[in-house]
Image 1 (spheres, helix red, strand yellow):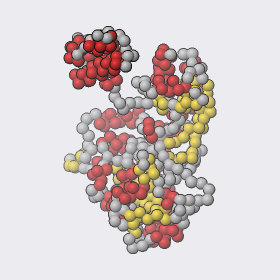
Image 2 (spheres, rainbow, N blue to C red):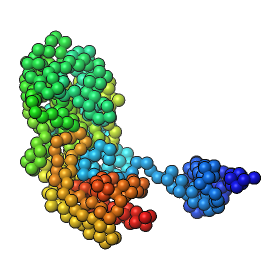
Image 3 (tube, rainbow, N blue to C red):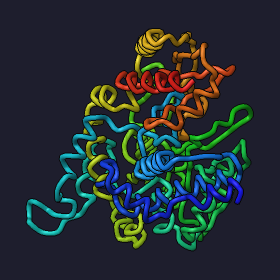
Image 4 (cartoon, one colour):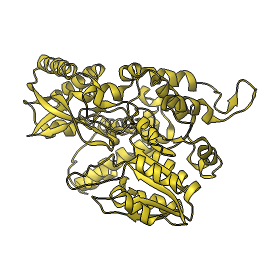
Length: 461
């Protein structure tokens, strides 16, 4: 019998390993199914290694250690906190808008027990989940009425289905955007049963293009803010005010998909100008949709604001049930909009706004602190000027001055790979084979996690 055959033959049975592990403190309180799977994975690991001749000897302790590693990994939550060192503030892949500690505390208080989600405390009868936010949103934005669904694509689809089913919607070719993940405005329109009518060209559309396309089957003029890309050069587009006036003249609905949706005029604070919700409303547009988890800095949802009679009709559409938001979204959105009652409070307390508008000096201070902490554990680094971006399909041509820390004494690719495997992963950038952390998206309470990960890396190498 060969050594390989002997090793395979001596691999323990699953049930015998489980009996052995049940006596170990670490395994006593673990779910049986998880232990069973981990034991299988551990034994299979050694079987595969023996067959490939990379394992030529083992002990029962070796098998136990492999099972422990496998079980620990299996018991981890897949959805976890990540340190964002990319400098992209609304990073779509990393969760977009951040929740503040105050918002988390509010969610804990409002969701740890039963709630008045659909219960009217004044009458003692059934209420509407939308009542918690619709008046508040209307108050903050200045709209007649408001409605909330689970994302902005759903908001657009709901409006199109209610007001343009089997009728024509006119839109500029330059505004037929893809919102991400291959979801495109034309596809959403098709699903809503609205008929798309394209006018103009990619770079130039005139008011006359809309006028020529209007007929007895036209129900809506749709304007889409190109929040995730920018066309420059020989361009022409029709303003939302012109769209609103033309729609009113022909007694059809005007609608604008603002995409990101912002309540703060960033240009007042030295940043690039982005069309605000207020400006869209003041243009006379009938319906406006925007996202909750982008520049608004709240939970994922789609917000619809506009004429009261139109919002009332949307509430009766059967799609609303499919698009409705959960209690966590309602609670988080109410908290977010309450901060916007006072713009100064919103800028100070909302993490998204705070990161966009904070003074550059604050970012440099954080970079200096991180550099000194790295020096304490004998890691060389340097502070580098860089440009952060908004991200999340918002303000694509806008950059924000920032500072980052480049690790000069370690292999950047090795650091990147190792950090993605940590309990709290760090996502940064590798530039010139140096691991780079942009401090624009790093909070002061994250230093300890960053340094802990670097210490673990040094121990391994």
